[in-house]
Amino acid sequence: MNKKVTIIDSMMGTGKTSYAIQMMKEAEINEKFIFVTPFLDEVQRIKQEVTNRDFKEPDDKHGSGTKLESLKRLIANGDDIATTHSLFAMADDELIDLLKWENYTLIVDEVMDVISMLQGLRKDDIPVLLDSGLVTISEDNRVIWKADPEMDTKYNFVRDYALAGNLYAVNNIAFVWNFPVKIFDLFEQVYIMTYMFDGQLQRYYYDLHNVKYDYYSVVREGNRYELQPKSDTTEDRSQLKELIQIYEGDLNNIGHNMYSLSSSWFRNPHNGPKIKQLKNNLYNYLRNRQKAIAERILWTTFIDAKNKIKGKGFSKEEPEGTNNDIGQACFTSFNLRATNKYRHKDVLAFCLNRYMNPIEKHFFDQQNVKVDEDLLALSDLLQWIFRSAVREGKPVHIYIPSRRMRDLLKKWLNNELRCSNVNDVYSLVI
Image (cartoon, rainbow, N blue to C red; front, side):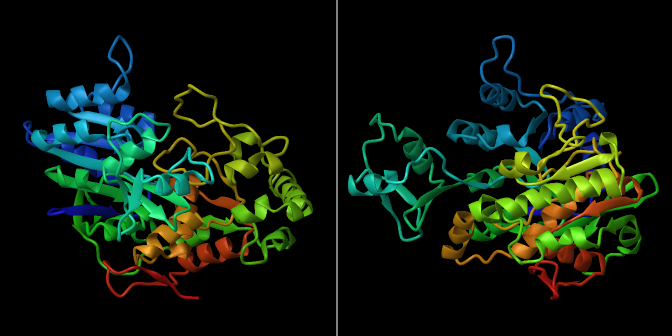
């Protein structure tokens, strides 16, 4: 990477997207933008609010082929483009070649899923791949395809990722895919808009691949939004401390241990009675102690654990195919970001204890990149809370049965974070 990425690291609700819209509206007309966001409703927002540009959205209708093919055609045409993380993550060599010639500016709303464990491999597939000579593992743990690239096998998906140079082995028990990092060097400028970037996997992915980045924050001056270098001045969180009303009481006893409510805790068959108790606690908090109706409730846990603890009056999920400004769901994923549709919700429950996937953690460990799991957990918790009424400056009540997660939030609210330099990793004061 020769260019530096601009990290716009500002608290949720401070105007990061508004700054991006202002920048795109004021840019020279010959500048071209790709805006990448997690949700389709934010794609529509960009198309509607950047009024002096004709932003196009990749489309698989009316004979246009797949959305990826549509995205490639839009790039080849030099159109301004608004698209989703999931589509942009499908970038292949052809798309990369197109970007080399088009001089786009990339704006990414919230961090992307830049690494993931490769699915579709069975327990003995990796030894078979190695013993047969189809692949080999380099000194830096990269998976190298050694067989004929034209060979047609059930491992074609491994071949394609390996030939692209984006596949790594973890202890020969799993393969981990990396988003092609060279893409970030093909843009005139790259902006990542998020909060607490130092606690997110894309930061560690950048460190692994030696991507350089600078931190900025957004400030509002009158009717304008401006960027300024991010300082290490302590944020004033006193108002948030008043607004975020954390439940303290006997319903928290279920999460006292350090690993209670982790994904492995939910999977442990011996914890069946405890999970049933958590289900009762969740119902008690939402329906009895808060007397909340569905329209006020927002809660989360791991997807695999959802059905184990959901209850009557708060099990509703977002209907498929809807694109409403006002979210109807009570349950959302715990890593929800970049949406305002739940800003009316003021009774919350965060029923999980966030740890990193062990395979992904070991992937970074073997590359000598240390991940701060507490900061990663806190980042997800804060992003989720800020989907609620607190972003409107309204009080919220929240049940966080995991003592670890609850303590992390309280330490953040009390400014018990320290950072010697804005380009150094934060550490929690325990």
